[in-house]
Length: 119
Image (cartoon, rainbow, N blue to C red; front, side, top):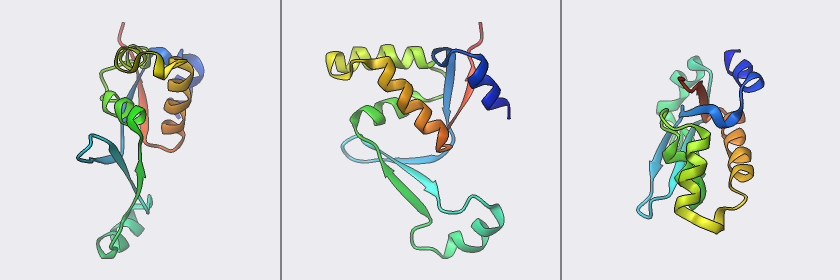
């Protein structure tokens, strides 16, 4: 419940995203998110080891992979936007609108959580 309060009371740019799902990195540097097929611990324990593919694999593009790598629990969303602009220049514009939509999508799918920046 605290996460939702943070989102409603704070500026998204001031929040620090932290990854909460596993991932793999491809040879090209792209990220593949590994979302468990079962969130219920009982079902996961019962079925996960027997399954050939216990995870959904979500492939991120170059921009998404860059953002994912920056969601390390240290960078604010504002800082990630600065890093995106520095790395991709005009190709990423409008950077904060695109970043905001992507970060909210990651949060709504429970791939990240937030903490507040320490002042």
